[in-house]
Image 1 (cartoon, rainbow, N blue to C red):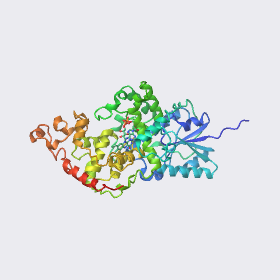
Image 2 (image 1 turned 90 degrees about the horizontal axis):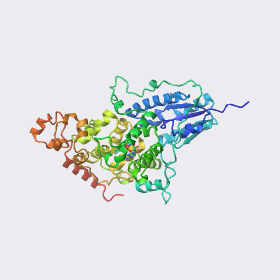
Image 3 (image 1 turned 90 degrees about the vertical axis):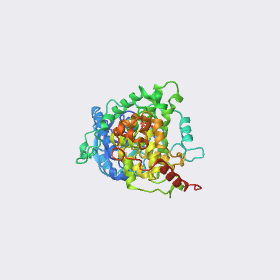
Image 4 (image 1 turned 180 degrees about the vertical axis):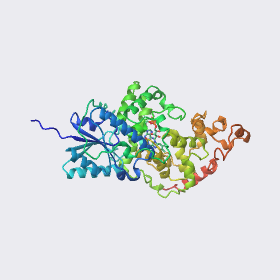
Length: 481
Ligand code: FAD
C-alpha cells in the first residue's frame, strides 16, 4: 500500500497570492495546510501600523476565499511563530514548512528561531525567494561588497538579465483538515476598533486589497498610465503611476509578474519600459540596503549625521502630521495620506523634505508617522526613502538640496487640482496664490472665502526663515565624513 505523503505547512506572510508563489508551487498536488500567523511581538515596533492592518485584514479575507475555493482553506492564528508554527506542524504531521523569504531584520531573526524550533523536532523550514527581482544576498559589486549606490546596482541587476517567467496559480489544492487553534479573522482585530473613529472609512474607495484587486490595478495601469509614466508619475493630480505599492508590499502580486506584464504592454523594448521598471529596481535596492545595513530603519547610514542638530518639537510635528503646516502642497499630501492611506511619490518627497530640512525634525519621526498611516508602509522602502530625503543615506539626494514647497507645488500642480481636492478650504483661491496663500492680497482672500489662521494656517515657518534654518543645520556637516 502506498503511504500518504506528509502534508506541508504553507506559511503565508508577505506573499498573499496564489500565482507566482514558489512555496505553493513546490507543494504541487500534495496535501497542505495554508497558515497565516499574526506575530506582533516578534515585529515589535515594526508590527504593521494602523493603515497596514486595515489592508492586511482585507487581504487575508481575499486570500482565505481564494484558497478555500481551490480546496485548502487558510488557518489564521496569532502568537509567537516559533511556538505556533511548530505546534501546527506537529498537529498535522508536516515535516516541512515552506514560506517566502522575508528581509526585515526582525523577520530574519524570527525565522531563525522558527527554523531552530522546527529543527529540534526533526522538521525543517524552507524559505524561497519570492518578493524581489533578485535576492539581496546574491548581488555584489566587483569588489565583493554590497552596493551602496543605486546606479551601479541597477546596472548589475540589468546585466543579470530579465527575471524568469512567473509561475501559474494552482487550479486545485489539497487541504488537510484544520487542527485546533485557528482564529476567526475578526478575532485578529486588525480593523479600527470602536470607540476609535473609523479613520479608514474612505480607504475602500481607492483600494481593493487582495490578489484580484492587485490584478485589476495592474490592468488599469497597463490600459493607460504606463505609456506616459515618465511624465505622468510626477503629477499628483492625475493617476500617473501604478498604485501597486501596497499590493507589492503584501505580495498580492510579485515584482516579476509586474515586470513581465509591463514588458508585454510596451513591446518596443526594455528601454521603453525602463522608466517604470527602474522603480521596481529601486524597490529591490531598498531591500538590498536593508539586508546589508539592518540599522537602516533606525540610524543614519552616513556617520556624519550621527550628531546632526535635529530640533524635536511636538507642535511642529503635529502640524505636519495633521496637514496644517501652511504649505498647501504639503498639507494636501498629508491629508491625502490620512484619508486614503497613500500619498503621491512627488508629494512624499516634498512633505518629507519640509519636515527634515526647514522644520528640522528627525527623519525617524516622519518615518514613524508614515509607518502608521501608509497602506504601503514598507520597512525597506520607507526607511531608505526617508534617509534619501534627509541626505543621510548612502545614495542620498545632495544633503544641501532644500526643496522649496511653493515652487514644487507650482511646478507639479500648476492648476492646483491636487491641492483643491484635498484642501477644499482653499478651493476658490486663484491659481496665482494657491501655493502661497499668505502672499495673497486681503481682497483676494476675502473673495475666496479664506480667512488665514481661521480657515487655513499661515506657514509654520516662513520660506526664508525655514531655508536659513536648514542651511545653518546643514553647515554643521561640512568637513565631516
Ligand atoms: P509607481 O511609481 O507605480 O512605482 C512602482 C513600484 O515601484 C511601487 O509600487 C513601489 O513598489 C516601487 N517604488 C517606487 N518608488 C520607489 C522608491 N522610491 N523606493 C522603493 N520602491 C519604490 N514606497 C513604499 O512602497 N512603501 C513605503 O513605505 C514608502 N515610503 C516612502 C517614504 C518617502 C519619504 C518617500 C519619498 C517615498 C516612499 N516610498 C515608499 C516610495 C514611493 O513613494 C512609493 O513606492 C510610490 O509612491 C508608490 O506609488 P505607486 O505604486 O503608484 O508607484
